[in-house]
Amino acid sequence: MGVLALLLLPHIAAAEIHFVEVSAQMGIDFVHENGVSAEKRLPETNGAGSAFFDWDTDGDQDLYLVNSGHLEKGRGQSWNGLYRNEGSVFKPVVGAAGARGESYGMGVIAADYDSDGDPDLYLTAWGPDQLYRSDGGDFTDATDISGLGHEGWTTSAAFLDMDLDGDLDLFAAQYVHFELGQQPWCGREDMDLRFYCDPRLFKSTADILYRNEGDGVFSEVGLSAGIDQKGNGLGVVAGDWDLDGDPDIYVANDLTPNFHYVNQGNGCFVEDGLLTGTALSADGANQAGMGVDAGDIDADGDLDLFVTNYQLETNSLYRNDGSYFSETSFKSGIGEISLNYLGFGTGFFDFDNDGWLDLFVGNGHVHDNIGEYDELVTHAQRAQIFRNRGAGIFSEVTEEVGPAFAAKYVVRGSSFGDIDQDGDLDIAIVSNGRRFALMRNDGEHGNWFQIHLEGRQSNRDAIGALVYLWAEGREQMRQVKAGSGFLSMSQVDPLFGVGAAKAIERLEIHWPAGEVQILQDIAVNQRINLEEKTR
Image (tube, rainbow, N blue to C red; front, side, top):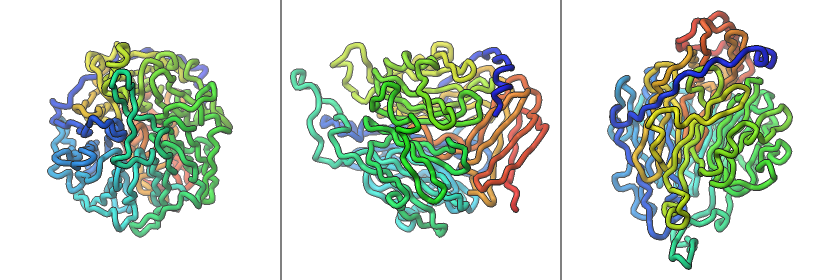
């Protein structure tokens, strides 16, 4: 869809970009604690994530930040943080409203799994995962009753309605089997320099798929559903890449082939990464996949994929060509630039609202002492911003975005949300073992439009819905998703940049239950709420 319009319309002139780091100004004093040790235990370098979600259902984006603590000593005072958005400032919620976390924390996603009108929290960890049910804003630990307290090493996760029955199921990526006291010595013996070990020295594990039984209980159904491959899962995103109406699942694996699970529509999945062209690099090699996101970068009406990888590997951009994907990192302009960085948190977002999805890549090395071995490599690294010049061709603009991006971070989780409701997306960055950063987007930007969906036949949050928008004869598409990047989740409500357009000509919502709703002639620079029509 929309190919003709794409070819005929010129690219809108670039707006000035400017991000400002405002965490202290906005009342967020959060430091991630990873319990770093001389033993270089692998979870210590993994970091943690963040989530933008409307905790108090007042229409703006609140923020949840995951902490980790110490592998042996526990959390101490390193609790997770919940911050209420009060417009010009975030206020910390005492005790995170009961969802402060107990295990060595990794990731977070939020969605209304019980369809009671408020978002619940699922936390991943090394150790038991946790599910917190929201009861009017206060969280209750529902881990035991839900069956989601898996004890292993869960990294990223995603909510999805895999069977289209109107409630949310859950996919939980698993990394490797790690036990305290069984950490091998890795590094340079001639330099007496110890490193974090290669994940291939540990046993790979199978990811977990949970089916929502509709009574607050989840059943583990991965093996029977075809989720049976063992990998080193770090990033996950769900999306309907083949546009057949049901959600597929993509997993970024660390030094094992990435998984592309295609939903068969009968409760089962088939892993087709090699056939779709999304399992390996362009030259057929395994890469160290970390973060992942899906978005329509070329405005052709389907979802493309982006995966961050290790230093001296290119990040991978997989363009969706319908029945297969093409790895286009070098053609798109991001391949060579990514070689000097080690990427984790990432996301597509239209920072200038010109109607093209731009790209953020958060970087930071896994070895905190890498500079002692290689003087050309640093632990902390610059994050990167790439502008989409049109049709999925990118150029790096990091040096143009303001002094905030001149600083170096050890980025792990990152998420995107409009914290000040000014119609553009801001960035939350969790830096491993360091202070949190909040990048507010204060740049010039085009007009915008945002929609909040509420399912009736579909799941309440409309996770999996596809939203198509036409403005000035040009088409865009966004997917409603809960979980992406690395260990993180961005705001659920799709936000579109529409450039100089004065009105939305047509809006199509393809609900997970199958209905299509159409709206026409809508004013720009507003947020609307839309409820799914019932049959």
